[in-house]
Length: 352
Image (tube, rainbow, N blue to C red; front, top):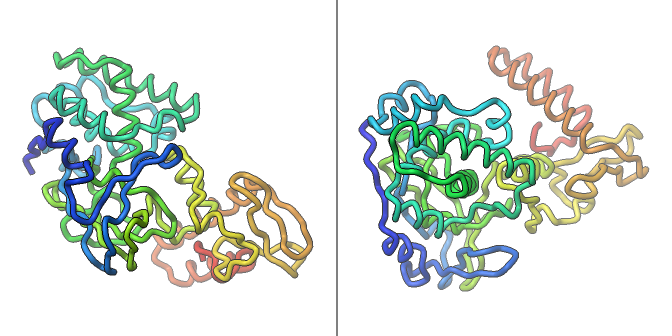
């Protein structure tokens, strides 16, 4: 696969994200949600809202050899000057562990195209925790040094910190050309799709994103997953929406720097029919539900409390045992782990 730079000039990129560029999508704005898409007219279920090709795309790094085979001489020089990230940076910045090549390619965009990306996409700097923002700047300084050592155009630490924030906030993980796999499939690559960056998040989305983008030359397709009224906000889900609420919120806080308060996450779970996050209380009579984004869990029957940290520890242990049993290929072992889990969680719990 030979990667080809697909940079839009500033005027082209600005037009692509403007109100008049699409008959179905209109850009709205408010202080709490930023800029986001709403429906310009009524939209039928399954109607295509947007088809978009990547402005910058790269295979997952280091991947299975495809990433190294696709490197240009300029990219190779930067990679040689900087092997990547520390373990702490990978943990804090999430996507950038596998999206390192995407970041390098974005940093090598022509000046006007890079400025257009920074202008059109939010970097979420004001939402990010101070220690994470400081780490992000250290990674930016490291990349700046690598670019300089490779003889590339100078990029300031401020400019690269913004770019890293843009990549963390807006990059889409894409699947290979076969489109196979479910929500747990590791992305084959990562891309910046400037026009798609205006879809806001909801755990109850009304838009489905087909993330198949074979070899980076394909396109993402966004379809309405239900009928949408004129003026209604359009949402995709940034995480696997089948996960329990505490896991969805944990992932969004870690990778996107916000606590989700969408209609689904903000609902009164004590009256929810799904019980997707519920754990059995030790009293044996009721189910425990989270009281808030980072608060205790409380039994709806006896009022007993349990800390979020203990719930997450239980969840992590369960996922680890399920993964180990699944890798072994023994159905009996998987069933035994699930039977054990159901002694603690509701039958409708997303993990079970």
